[in-house]
Image (tube, rainbow, N blue to C red; front, side, top):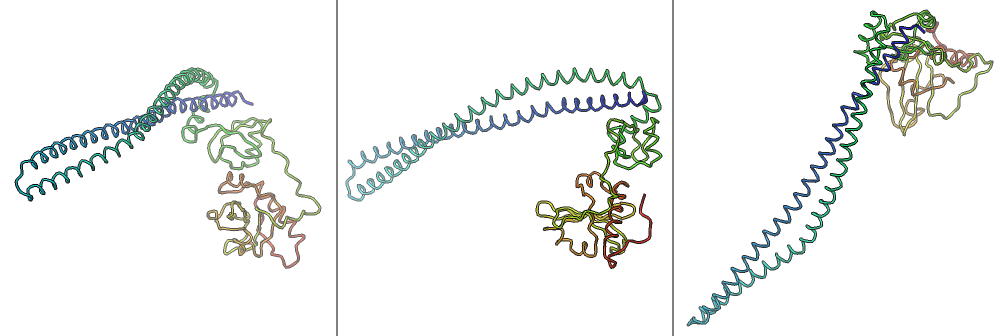
Length: 368
């Protein structure tokens, strides 16, 4: 591996660690702020509980004062009843006494209700005080941990910045500018090549470009502009199962994912379908059979794909090639040429074993 590329790998590792540490340092105060916000909520709850207790006490004092006033009126009315000269005046005073005594009883009932509620109010206050005490202890622990972690991260940042400067010094200036320009927009300026593919953008490389990278030349990806490198320890592709067996293994009848081929589909010509069942729903992806480009968006329907997309499967040929959902998501809008080649190889076997009336592909050459 070229020294420039080796230094770029060290530089990219340093850049990633510096980014991670900076994000962690920035996140710690937010974590503490979230805990303090919760603490403020608990304090507000305690204040509310204490305010309710004080309000009940004030209301109780108001009722007690009213009772005293009413008792004074009763005493006054009784004194007046001794001096009246007519039955009508006496009856009127008795009515006033009865009304006052009824008001006294109503106020006493309200005081009794407040006394019954006071126990619950006291429990609320004690619970809020305990919660506040626990949260105050927790926030102090969090703050202490945040301070320690920040100090540790800042120390590591200083170390990684030193490594970054050392790595930069060992890279050609033009190559360094290319790396930093691409890193600014894509998050990384260097990408490994595996299985003839740029691992940065997942685009397949032309054979010549792939060979140049493997030979140790400094090559830039035509798709994402990242600087490419090849690591013999990881870059050699795993051998695929042989597609030249004399007899094609029959696909299983009931499956949750499968490839299908259609020689004619609407006005699109030859296409490959990728079907998948998951969580009670079926999905369908459609690809041009020659370029591997995805056509339209992924379609979703409830149920099993064999029923939900029966019209698409009709007149199609089921392929035995493995369907890897994670790889489909990774490839996004275009299948790599290795996958297209494998699909076409299995299609040829299927057509050799199919009855004469089976749909045949057009004479356009498959992508290679």
